[in-house]
Length: 277
Image 1 (tube, rainbow, N blue to C red):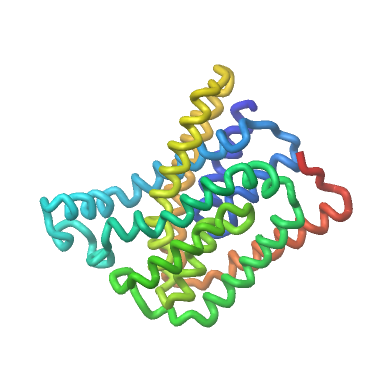
Image 2 (image 1 turned 90 degrees about the horizontal axis):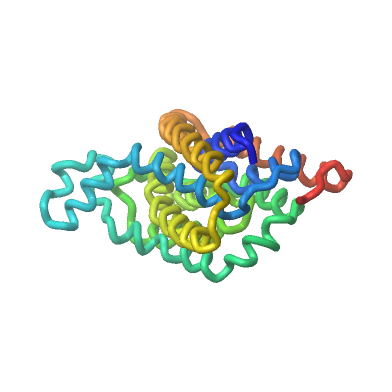
């Protein structure tokens, strides 16, 4: 992999991790189109760590406030913005458990069977797009961030486990679940981002630990570092964009994109223009 490929893949990861259009699907499709070869899930997870850095940079004060609250050093109202008062650290961790278990139990399937099926990825892209439309159209969208209930943690946490399937999108499925639970669009996005941090961190540590035992070629180190830096920068900008965008707009833009991409992927594959590698 050269540096240009690393920059492109890092930018795509940073863009699509938080915009609800599936980062894994886009990375896989790019490789199919251009025949690029990478370290597989190792490089993917490294790029995900880049987006974790973006989350830490953007939500640093909120995370710090919640952690200090649980250490008994300050009260939530002292440091955490009003929209996050009442947010608890442990529910975020517990809600991440279903996705963590799915990742461990289905790791080999995700690495092989899920990643070379254009029809599956096309259907999940389009299907989740239609479900997102229904959630955005019929969800009450009446509850802000501080009104999140334990039932919401359970529903959104379970939904996040489906993100192991390429094309589903972790942010897409959690934002959709949040809208179905009656959360405001902005609250659903913010909830999705906070909930994603533990699972991205856990997956990153797990996969990079395995990669270190096998060793990473010296030639791959610089592209990996450049890819991570790019995904961090682009990811930070996309977090800011999406939270601002959903304050005033529906999710229809992402719905149309997902359906068009999913349909196009299936058509191109059936016509023989797309070859999984």
